[in-house]
Length: 295
Image 1 (cartoon, one colour):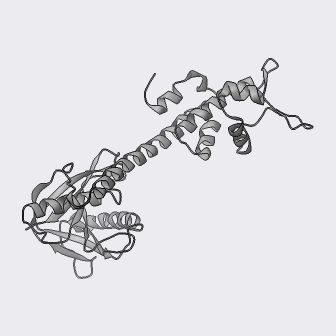
Image 2 (tube, rainbow, N blue to C red; image 1 turned 45 degrees about the horizontal axis):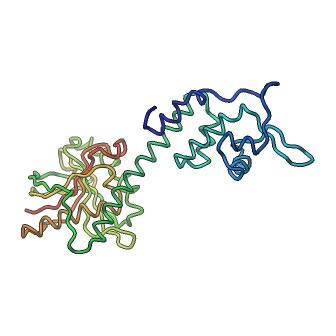
Image 3 (tube, one colour; image 1 turned 90 degrees about the vertical axis):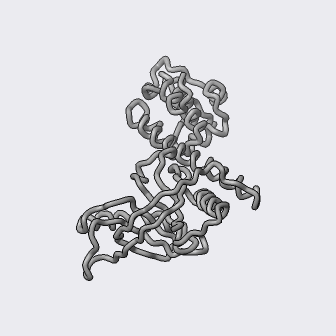
């Protein structure tokens, strides 16, 4: 059997089709018997009943006693496995309602992809926090610092004061708009980047400047633009999971420590350089450089 939790659920043949409609020989089970055979607690069965996930086949109008059918065990076991994936009940309901078709497998795959992104981000956050808790003597050896020369370039630019919670949405919309605008000025000629002219967190708002390199400078009536001077820079390359805030701060600290160890100073504001489709990248894909100009 596969070690992948998604395959582990979908690979069990009993879940490949919805439970059949009750038939005359479909054994009726008491709540206690059903709980034992499904390995669900009585509390869980009551919850799933209230949520409409797994309703009893029959409820005695006088006593209120609930009965299930043996054919419902497949659904009960599917719910139990999905909950072992920490899937919220609302999403469990989507998979259960679609069981027997490709929609169920697709819903599960979407959930697990999002979960893997979250786990990867949390792993990087834990590594960042460990470094922070080590105090001033901490080192950032897991980051490899490189150097490169960057040629002078004309960039379309937009700058704004923005807090960290607002940053991803604003940056995504702004970069997308400037990249589309770049087609009127010789097209995109290099990676887009964002320059942090001040600290950005939940209390400090930068400002942040989005820059999109283009082939020619706009005229006086065109969008805002400037010349980014040629320079040398020190940088570290990050995977998608490492770009989340606050763990990305470890990358900034790594370059700062590297510069300090060599007696160097940054000559301009740090920046994040994006060289691939960030939205489409997986947690382990390289997507971004944190760079400091040094000359």
